[in-house]
Length: 153
DNA sequence: GCCAACGTTGGC
DNA sequence: GCCAACGTTGGC
Image (tube, rainbow, N blue to C red; front, side):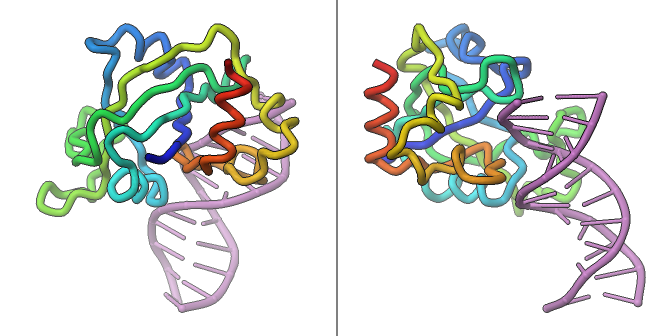
């Protein structure tokens, strides 16, 4: 079992939106970055834990915990000309983009802010605290995940 | 809204 | 395959 961090802009899809979904489960579509795609397609497994992170907003940080309930499969929105993340170069016989399904496990009462995360001395591997980390799906080393979970309790 | 950092594109 | 131009991300 591995830990991951998924970023989302709450204006587009927030933790409350996930909470309002049937079974509190939603597919994580619209990822259009190859490195993130590789994680979604190849590395993220059933039962993996996902930190839900709000980005590009007033209160930036981790707001919840989710679990992977379906492993990587083709993101159908890439073929839909009406979709926001339509990719005209993607073909059904050779899909480019993948997604997973996640189910909300816990919404935290308090935000664990980016600032707080950065101030934790032993958190130094995850992309968040490294320079220029713009990946929207990133792995979290287990020891750092444990520290984050402890801070969120 | 600014801007630095990064990813992607496309001409050569 | 290089690299300049361009687009996007995301914290502030």
